[in-house]
Image (cartoon, rainbow, N blue to C red; front, side, top):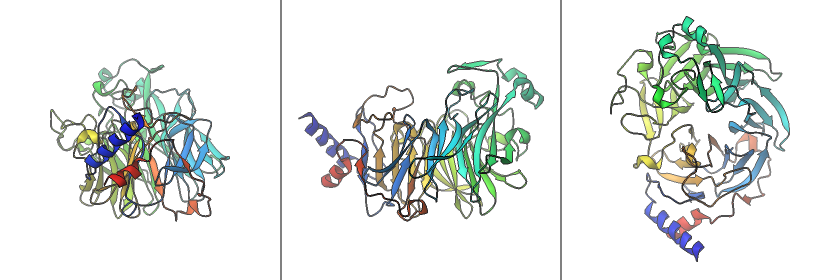
Length: 446
């Protein structure tokens, strides 16, 4: 009887919420694939690495598992499928010298059968890999890291000493210095062939990072001080030989010339370099995004950015924005009519699919969904995975302050014709969880 009542609830829920831009906020919510419009969605397979789990999943459009990879570590912080069919995955080795979210320690590559074929560790007392990585066309790997700088070094570079506390204790670590972003390119042998450091580009000019621009201390213990710029994107753009970077704390993305190391473009927050109006009480000023993540290049001078919208004066809400660098304007964006239906306080991702749809990951709720160019919801998924082996069909009040225990940092959709899936056996389909097929209930109820 209880199961029947639950199913009836879901049917009514789906009927009420079948509009294009509305999602739901509820004390209890179902998991799995909630909606699937086969005609309008980009059919294929979705890859995700749940943050609590050591398993990376590849699922079909109905939520069936067609392949998995098992690692010795939880992800740091996502995985991607390479054109050769291998899995490139961040590894959270633990024992990090820094307590800032995103710290991991290295990158691992597995073949289709789960064998570890390549590994790069960056985990010492003075540097650590965090958040991101990217495999370049030449086989090299672009890796994002933090390097430790002392308080004295920061003061010598111009930081106001009155703004720096002597130490900050956060989540088991006593921090007494700045963790500053840099990018390292390594070859297959693990040799460093190129590096770029924020520390080498400090200043107040339009192509520099102001060491005295920092978030209010109320945003987080480390954000205004030792976690200064907090990058979360490192992507290589082959057609122009640029490196694309994104700063959560500055709320900007940057184009770095791979040959010269110079910043050639930035977008998102002109007040970070003394231009435009700063945000104020109930006024966003000229700042366009807040706490952004996962900038990606779309081609023809356009970029996609996940705008978390956290600590936003005009109200918290997340959005995905498409930016044209020739005009510096937002030319497309997706946000829900109800702000609390789509809001990732931290993390999150977006991927433009070959058919023009956009795949969006709202991290804290383990929510992955696909929308069309005209903003219609065509695929909706809530991860049921709350641990390596545990799944749930219904989520109740979360025990975590920032979201449910089913978090997904980033996900990717791959079409059946993706080179990495060529000649791969995807016929063995196993349900991700023993739950009702809510997308079928939805289609029946329409």
